Length: 230
Image 1 (cartoon, one colour):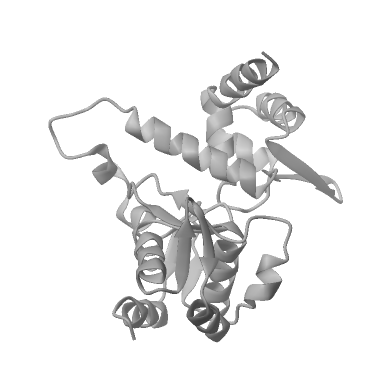
Image 2: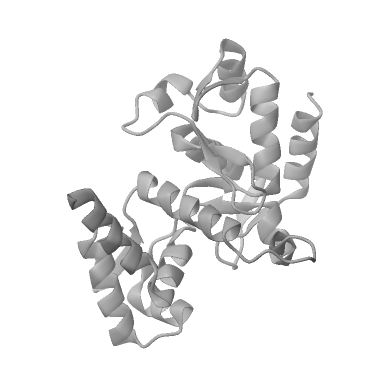
């Protein structure tokens, strides 16, 4: 009964349009102020504060104070994964139409490469994930993944220490359902490390649009080579 009550409470919180918009904005992985979130959710500053208080009390988001500003972020990677899973449920529950799937209405740049909290999602991320598994660099058991010796060597070439990532207090690697592609991309500590590495190499970069990532010319060359098996 307690679990059911908690589920109802969380569903009510996420079911509000303004709060859902706030959570979606924070899925970029960046911490934002109440004023910024009020603007994004198109509500007044006091109303945004009320929503943020409820989300903090439910431990869906966390707040950090720096000087006179308070910055809000998703509380944990597990919460972020749950929000992304809800997005998949919402997409699947959308009314069926005789025209092509609603996914075609997703902006091209967001569908191609975007953030999913602290890792990369979208068409490119799904293709990279499939290459990692299909190329024998990652093995899957259920939705949990692990790196093979060949995979650890390849990841080291990107600047990722697999042993260090395994030692973090979160899942090493897991499948994360991609709401636009309907296939999984890579999540967990390894997914976050890959996005950090690709950003440091100058292959992907953030844009002014929330969650949207830009793949640089050097990044396109790198990913094309990797996807071809080079």
